[in-house]
Length: 241
Image (tube, rainbow, N blue to C red; front, top):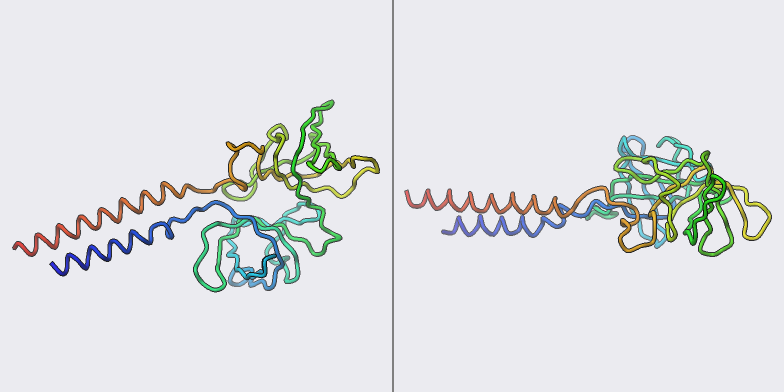
C-alpha cells in the first residue's frame, strides 16, 4: 500500500509540473543591449530595457537582421554593445539569468544606423499599384510597391507575405531611411516585417504562435495518467500474489 501511495504522489508531482514543461511556445518581444556573445556555446547574454538579464540560445534556424537595411547577419557579426529587438520563445528556464530560444534578432550598431521603425497602421489606401500606409501619429506615409519585400515571422525564420495582408491597426517593422520633406512625411520602405496584420480581436497574437501549448499539455496529461494507472495496477497485482 505504501508503494502505491509513493507512486501516486510521484505521478501527481509530475502532473503538477506539466504546465511548466509544456509552456506556451509563443514568441515574446524583447528589447535591450547585448552584453556578451559566446559563439562556441551559441549563446547571447543581454540586458533588457527593464534592467533584467537574459541569455538567448541560438540555433541553426535563428535569424539575425540588420536594423540598418534588413539584411541577414551571422552570429559572428553580433557584438557586445549592440542594441536589439528580439523575438524569443515564451518558454524560459528557471535559471539565473533565465534562458530562452532565440527566433529572430534585429540588431543596430548605433542609433544613427537604425532604420528599422515600429509602425502602427492607421489607414490603408491603394493608389496606382502601390499601397499607402499612414501611421497612427498621422506624420508618415509608407508607399509599399512591388519592390518592397514583405515578411512575417514564420515557424522558422521569416515567411513571405503580401502587402495586401496589412490592414488598419496592423503593427509592423519597416525599413526606410529617407522621408520626403512634406507633411505627412513620405518614404519607400525596402522591407516590412508584419507582426500583426490587423488590430482586430480575432487577429493572431503579436508575434504569431509557433506551437500549441494546449495540445502539448493534453499529451503530457495523458502520458502521466497512463503511468499512474499502469503503476497502480502492477503494484496491486504483485501484492495480491
